[in-house]
Image (cartoon, rainbow, N blue to C red; front, top):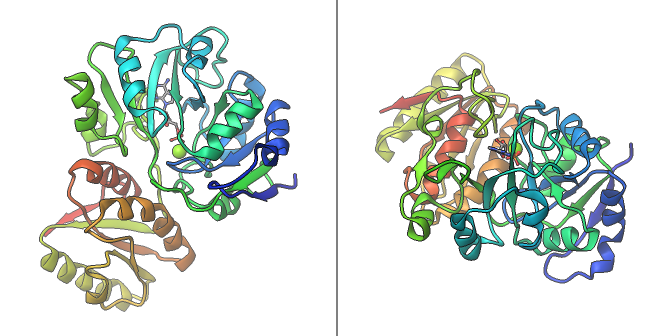
Length: 351
Ligand code: AMP
Ligand code: MG
């Protein structure tokens, strides 16, 4: 199949520019589009053949559920069996925005969309193109990240093209996304609200609205568990991973730099291709041909926004060994380190 590439300016576009994308979605086809978190691979969430196509295009295991994207609260009536008070409060505060909530699903939502689960994940994105696409097509859009399963999520249209060219009907290129990490997922279908995936909306922000919020133990654990029903993403599958072997070095900055320089020399001497994931503050301190800055420590947001692009670049470099600095696991740092630890398959050296 030939993938249509269409550029769209998120700051100023006319709804008519989305006509072809809408037609594709209405006919059960697939359109990749920008959201404020990462690019999504969209298909009609209420049409099981469309969600089956999403799994096929991504090579995604069929028990890893999709997120359904909506443009207004009324849509919940068609999708969710019930909407708890807590969800209404969270929606008031954080929708449209990078928060996904889990509800018991209505019969009409096909199980192929929910990975066989009786619950459904729903998000109302804030990105103007995503919102217009949902509204104009009249389709509730199932959209996981628009990458090949297991690769880093796409934060630019080029990343989507790299993975899915020829496998989907269209890519809407709205430039680089703002946040760069997937949405926070919170499960409200059981007692205490539980974070299944950390993201831009932090636990503290949720607690300010709801009171007690807990974090799924699997997020904190250092292992991937193959026996878990895919409740929280990445608990089961290796995610976000570059092809090379990535190691995170933790400790005081000076010691981290020394240890990374030592490892770089060791592997370079063995004839291996090596790369370093550094920051603006440290990038000049490394003796390595392939040093990349992921962002500035002064603004965590820049690190979140740059992370997946850098992980993909590691593959372009052809790095066999990747050494990365680590970040504080505070606020946004929690989400950043959650993704980095998975990319590194939990290889960590403490200095
Ligand atoms: P992605 O958009 O690629 O990050 O994938 C969506 C993620 O949302 C999946 O990895 C799921 O684990 C999570 N998700 C979707 N639906 C559910 C659900 N019903 N219960 C728990 N997690 C879900
Ligand atoms: Mg994904």
